[in-house]
Each structure stands twice: as structure tokens, then as C-alpha cells.
Image (cartoon, rainbow over all chains, first blue to last red; front, side, top):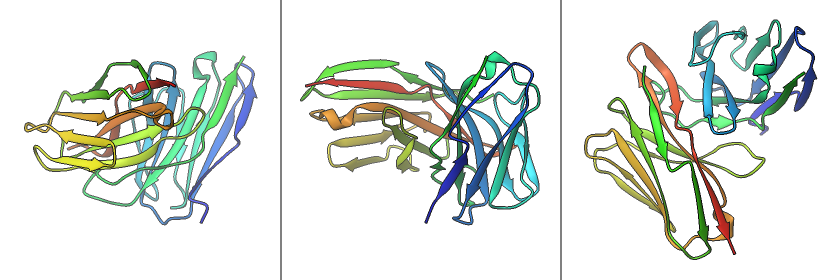
Length: 115
Length: 113
């Protein structure tokens, strides 16, 4: 049972380039999340999804887009990368509950550097 | 919007000393969750508290949920080097933020042997 798998693990981009981070979960979870982690800032929610075909904005959505075409996958896109997007990105998933009350299962993270 | 604040940001202790981190929410929470992240790792779920005034223990870790369900604490008795890491609390958004989970900034714990 792989749990939550993120690809790639590391990536270096130049300013203005685009990329997509892939998150896949095999636990049949309804909810999926993308967080970014920066020193001293904790985990900040970028976008999340409460089901296939649905997405919602989190605390820091600007500069990112997401898609949840399949229940098991949640994609995070950067259309034009900026140095401020240098961060560690974590994907997480959880079973459906009564709204954010189920434990999150995290992937191992993607370390992105934008130069 | 909802804010979850955690203090202290850093805590350095000698092995064997106790440690406490505090979490405060700007809104009443239906539940609060705690996570631990080891250096270089990903956050791992520790526990969830649901009831007002609830206290739960996991070996040397004691978790409390405030009576007003707006604050929580994690206390570690007699820290060990294996306790090193960042401890996060997290609370659900609720209402129009259905499914959203907001994390505190975390407390980074260093344990000196």
C-alpha cells in the first residue's frame, strides 16, 4: 500500500517556466490537499478538493492552479514560476468526514527551487 | 478568516526535561488535530481531540482540548532525543470552508542529550 505518492521529489525551475506536480493516493480518499512549507511559516494551504471534479482555494492560491479529474489524483500547476514559489510542497489526503475532521495522510514532499 | 496560532516557535530542552506547546484558534473548533514532523520528513498524524475539555495520553505525550474548544496543548514528559521534530496543531475551517484544515506555524523542538 503506497499511500500518498508525490512526483517529482526535487525540481529546479527558472523564473517563468511552468511545471506540474502530481499527487496520487491509493486509499480511495475523498479529500485531497496541497500545502507549501516555508521556514517559520508552518504549512499553508494552497488548494484543496473535497471530491472528484471539485477544487477550492486555500490560504495562498495565487500563482497556482489545480485539477482533480480523477479521484486518486490531484495535480498542482505553476504556470509561470517565481522565486517566491521556492518551497517544499506537500500533498495530503483524507477520508470524507463531516468537514476537515479526518486525519491527513501526507506524501513525502517535493522540494522546488525557482532561480 | 480562521487563524491558528502556535507558541513557542522554538523550544530547546535538555533530555529529560518537559516540553509544552500551545495552540490557539480565532474561532471555535469542532475538533483539533496534532501532527509531528521529523527533520527532513513529512507530517504524521498523532491524535485528534473532539470533546470540550478532553484529555488524551499517548505514553509520555498528553494532549488537552480547552473547554471553549478554541485552544489546545501538547505536553511531553521527560523528553527523549527521539522527540526531536516540529509539532503542529490543525483545525478545520467549517462553514463555507468545508473540508479545509488550517495548520498552526508549528513548534520546533530540539532535545540536547
